[in-house]
Amino acid sequence: MIVYFLSGLGADERAFEKISLPDGYEMQHIPWEPVKGYESIDAYAKYLSYNIDTTKPFMLAGLSLGGLVAIEISKIVEPELLILFSTIHTQKNLPAIYRIAGKLRLYKFLHSALLSVTLPFLYWFFGPVDNKGRQLIASFLKQTDPVFLKWAIKQISRWENIEIVKRSLQIHGSKDRTFPVSLIKPDYIIEGGGHFCVFTHASEINLLLKKELG
Image: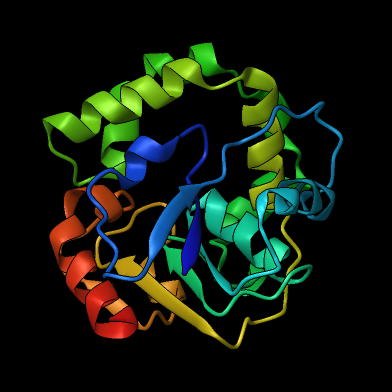
């Protein structure tokens, strides 16, 4: 069975390079497509859903922003299972400060050049991460289109989803600073894992995937 993966904001398939699926499962990555800036997240999800072969059973997996988009895609096509890494399920899981920022439209003032100055903060925000993880985060930031960055922050801070996907598996780090686990009720908590635990704690996550899918 094919499992379609969506990475986090600005990231690519390298975020999942340490993930190993059980026998009988094939990983395929759905790349981010450029945005013009005014698309709704559901319209964008519909566009990305064209990458999925719906004639065969499939699963969806999303990391962070990719989880939000995967949830929106699951409203259009029906996966056998939705796997959520370091993300939220509904708008109720959003920290209050994100919702306030969304209402104030603070995302309009974001720029990738500003973020590059605050790399140490980003390492903390996405951490705990090792040196390889820091290198990946810096690389992701460097390749992020400023238009996509503003669009993505807007979609996260103003997300309105209230639906819970019934067939889902949610894995979250205990030290996630982006989406604090205290606001979420995941199926599994990775002790010591941060927002990038899909990379830093991949061995533990692989065991969970083997248990649930194998």
